[in-house]
Image (cartoon, rainbow, N blue to C red):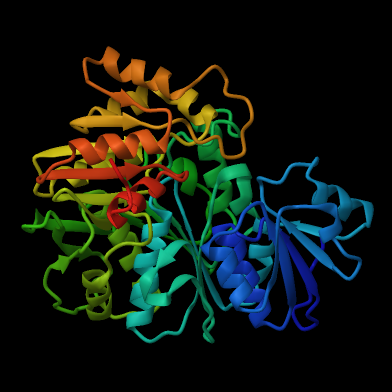
Length: 466
């Protein structure tokens, strides 16, 4: 594998530079004196931000973008061998790394790299921990999988030895990392276009935990079934969080305020002696209690006071596209959320149910044909938690084969459960239906990992016409 000498900056070209993680890495390298350029299939707010910082970004991926002065190329998992830039890079013999390999090499430059993993909740937990470190004035470098208002984007470049980043399991990419502290939030069946089954995913997480050095720490959800499968044989310190006193960190006195936000008291075997009273979250849902506990455990390790952690959590209103309030429509509140797995959908809709509402309308865009096919019954059951689910066409992402699956397949599965479900083949038709039918008291949630947030933005902006 190509090894970067960070004392000798070179020209690095990112194929897919507009990705949330790729753009952050591009900014980090530029800050370290590297010449950075790249390409993406389409323009976005992220590519514009990079251009504003003086990074050359080509819109459209063409062989002529690849010049002989490029010393290293970085690829995302979405780039296929028939991509014209991929082909040209290999024709010229330019060395290359994957996004995860580059992230791993960047991690080695920090005294305390923290990797946040799990099938769900990575962006929220990374954001929570980031807010705690910022509240404590610890000047961290941050790479987040969503936009965080307090840092004005998804990356922050600090001057301390602390680096916090998300660690994605897809294609085993997190096995290229070098963390000192790792968090495992949960392990669920997902990315079944790559993993064989849940057992294969659990094996991958066990290997990820095994990357920790002897003086490292694993913070793991103690409610994961058979956690010993992940922790057996580890030489590092292990800290657990979960629902009850069998875990090192657990909540007590859980209740919800008038806005549906959780309030709880932290109990820990590693009590800091600070009497900070209840933790007040400003994001909804029981799942966020456990995201917060994982972040608090990591913050404790990093020397953040509980007072600072509590203040950060009280201020944190969510990362971009994580139960994000977008505006109103006919008096209905519009929320956008990134949930794209049945477990996430259920957690988000149960959180929504805690909020004042007459009716929950969920506009869902499934992400990839393979995930929809593998988890079809689970998707159908989760979406029945909405009073009215409305389906958009499946977002294919990296896939070209529809596997005989469509949004109508999911609609039929929901109706087979005796629950009404609507489908519209275009965003325009969805928007017009909502404009005509949403009313005061409704809670309208657009949901999915594709571009369904366009619907929320259009409706909130008032630009949709009957």
